[in-house]
Amino acid sequence: MIRKLSAVCAVLLASVQAAAAQDLVPRFYYRNIGIGTADGPSSSSGAQDLHRFRLMLSPDLGPVSIDAAYEHGLSISSFRSSFAVSGGLGLTSTGGEWLPLQGVIAESDHVIWSHRVDRLAATVGSDSWDITVGRQTISYATTLFLTPTDPFQPFDPADPFRTYRAGVDAVRFRAFPGTFTTIEGVVRVAGTAIDTTLTVLVRAMTEISGFELSAYAGAVHEEATFAVGATFTEAGAAFRGEASLRRSEGETVLRFAVGVDRSFGVGGRTLYVVAEYQRDGFGAAANSDLLTFLRSPPVRRGELQVFGRNEVAVNGSYQVHPLATIDLLGLVNLNDPSLLLGPAASYSASGSITVRGGVFLGFGEEPMPPGSGSEYGVLPTSGYLSVEAFF
Image 1 (tube, rainbow, N blue to C red):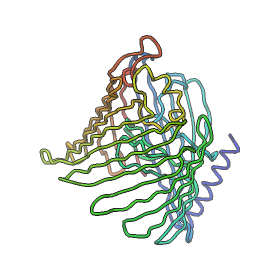
Image 2 (image 1 turned 90 degrees about the vertical axis):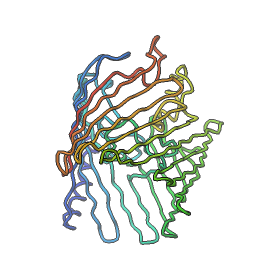
Image 3 (image 1 turned 30 degrees about the horizontal axis):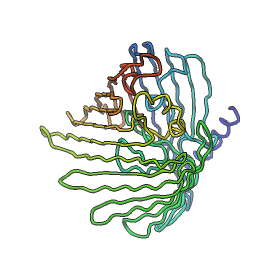
Image 4 (image 1 turned 135 degrees about the horizontal axis):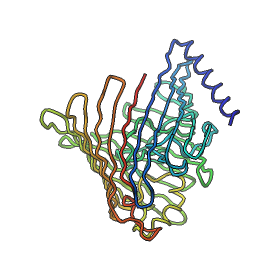
C-alpha cells in the first residue's frame, strides 16, 4: 500500500509541476455527509459521517491534454465497516478498476480511509479525431436515470450526489466526420469482483432531422452486444429511449428503457419532471429470485442500477427560490412490488457551496423469513444532511 501511495503521489506531483508550468491552478472539491439510519427489517439504527476530498488538474502539455483527479474518502460510522453505507452515499467511487490506482489506507471496525485516482488520462488529437488513454469517463447512456445500455459506470439512480461519474480504464479513439457525427472505438479492461474482462465496442452517433441517434456493437465483458439509442423533442418534451441485446451464458438478454422529461413554468418558477420505465432481462422477476439475482455475474460486476426486471423512476424538481430547490425521487419495483421515496431540498449558500438534506423511505415486503423480502422493503428509513464545496 505504501508503494502504491508513493506512486500516486509521484504522479500527482508531476502533474502539479506540469500545471504550474502552464500557470494552471488546481481545483478542489469537498463533501461532508451526515447520515442517520433508523431500525430496519434487517439492521439496527446508527449514524455515519462521510468525507470526500478531490483534487483536480487539467494541464495542456503542448499537443497533449491531461485530465487528473485524486480522491480521499473517510467514513466514521457507528456500524462496523462491513455494514456501513456505501455507493452514492459512501466514499470514493469504486468498481471495475484494472489499474492499481486505488486502495484502503486504513480500516478498523468503525473507520475506513480510502483513496483513489479517479482520472489519469492523456488526450492527443486534432479537429477531426482524438485518442484518450488511461482512466477516463465514458458514458453511452441516452435516458437520464435508468440506463441499462451504458456498459461503463452508470450512476446509482437513488444517489443524490451525482457530481462526478467514476472513471474507467480504457483506450478511446474518436473521429468526427461531420458536424453532428461521431464514430468511436473503445477498449476497456475491467477488474471486477469475480474476474478480469475485456470490453471492445464500436459506436456511431449522429443527428438526423432533429433525432439524435446512436448505436454500438461489440463485446461487453466479453459477451456479444448490440445497442441503439434515440432522443427527439416534441411539444417541449424530450423523449428518450435505449435498448440492447446481449448474448450472456447461452441466452440473448433484452434490456431497454424509455423516458420523457420536460420543464414547466409554475408560479413563476421552473418545475422539471422526469419519468422513465426500464425492462431488464438481467433483473429479478420476483422477490423469490432476489438471492439468485444477487449472485449473478452482472450484479457482481456492478453493472445493474436496480434489482427488478421492471422498474419505474419518477423525479420532480421545483425551484422554490433562485437559491433553493425541492425535489422528490420515486423508484418502483413492479415485480416485488416495492417503492423507494426520496424527498430532498437543496440550498446554494454561495456560488461554490451547496447544502442538501433529505430522507429515504422504503415500502414493501420485509424479509420474513430471511432470504425473502423486496428490493425497497428491506431498506431502513434514513436521513442525510450534506455540504459540498468547490474551490
